[in-house]
Image (cartoon, rainbow, N blue to C red; front, side, top):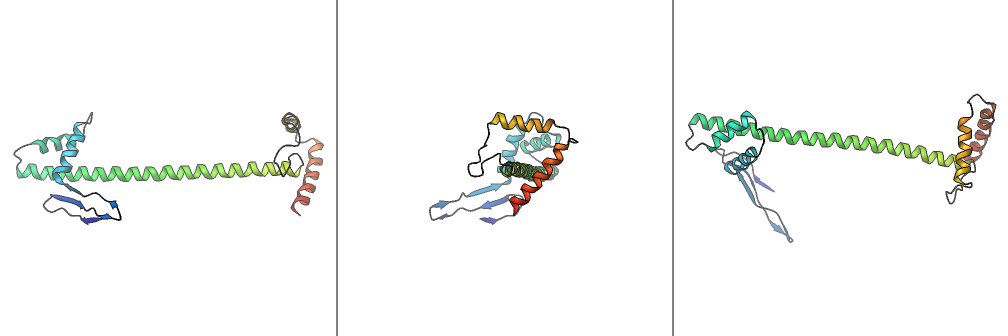
Length: 177
């Protein structure tokens, strides 16, 4: 639960409160400017190549006697860093949304492909090549593959294709009735 969120003299940034309800606890956390700044400086010091803006932030934050100009510059740099953090978080959310959309599209494509495979299996049942109760082929795998390979090798203009089409239409009509 957020108790308050404001920037009173740039000191208190966020205050959360924790309660114990039915054995569940939440954490009390106060984040002020100095805490945030200390954590940010530690982060920046861990970077291999911080930006010029980040180097200036560290320099001004570690400066003992800051002038009013230094304070204004430091405040502006802090706001800029926080804005950059928010932008990075927003970018991460957008990236996650895009990844989820891609995953959903791939799932839909896979589902459509699976549906077509099920329909092909259904056609093999209609043709009498597969037992409809067990789902097992009525012939050996070698016999089925050999027969289907022979069909695939037959030129499309061969008269046998017209004969098979006629027989197939009869079986499909009979099956759908």
